[in-house]
Image (cartoon, rainbow, N blue to C red; front, side, top):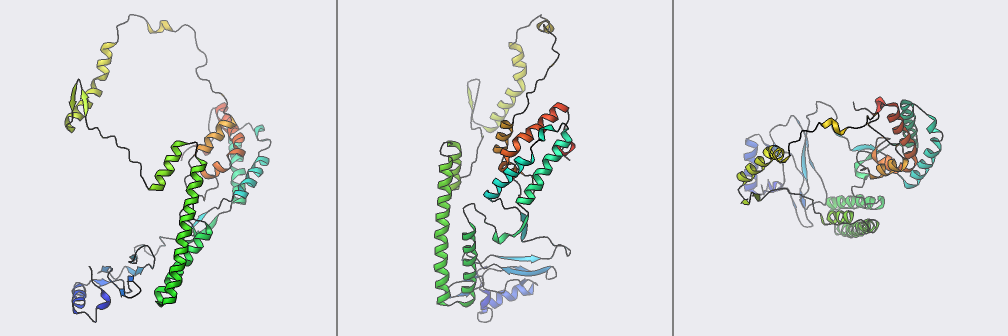
Length: 351
């Protein structure tokens, strides 16, 4: 609806339109301008509702995402319970503290190989990691506004972005030439810093992975915004020399092949009168052999893990990757104890 509701008292067409809405008990929830330029203010984006009992408020977000401010409506559907929090709990992994954590764990696991019980070994292993991660990387509550969403956004740039948004709100409220000039100048500087930071970030990634062509292409596709869509759509199928292009015929041809492959293969196997047990000459006492897991193998597996999940947990994939060098030996001991004892502790079993 391209109608400026701010003209309700001066434009008959606008007042008639609003009166029609009101006659059906539809009320606007946004009362402030949704588009502000240096020369005009308009309210052409709005949300109407006929349920005023559950509506808390209409919200307008003053942001630079678009020349039209985003709007939304808040409804009370939670029966008084809090449904959303702007804060979240996480850990900040400082490189210097990671080094200190690895040193502390190396000392803590001295004599760990003397433990001969899988349950005790796993309990001590988890305790040593959890207690020291909580010590070196305590959980902190952060506001989502103060958390960078991109890896190249540093705390300095994030502070500048928040400052830019504050200057924009000042400009929207004052509408003076001075506030407009200050906002534009600071905004342009922030945009320049963002471009340079992103450029340096991807340059570093490419340099780090210059010997890995697969990862290099993944980085380039990420930079260009390309998504990997693999299609397995069969456009044609050759069946006994006949080329099929009709979807129904292709499906029937595939079904016929896979349902008859067993019987057709059976016809090609020559008949034999030999006893299968005649090929077994010696009795095999042990049928399974397992070599002990080495610390090198464990460390390689940990380093290949995907650092997914939240950072609130003390033992997460991200934490294990950071401390892989100092825990590979004790973890390999835990794994070998489990195979030697023939069981896994309850802590490792899924709930």
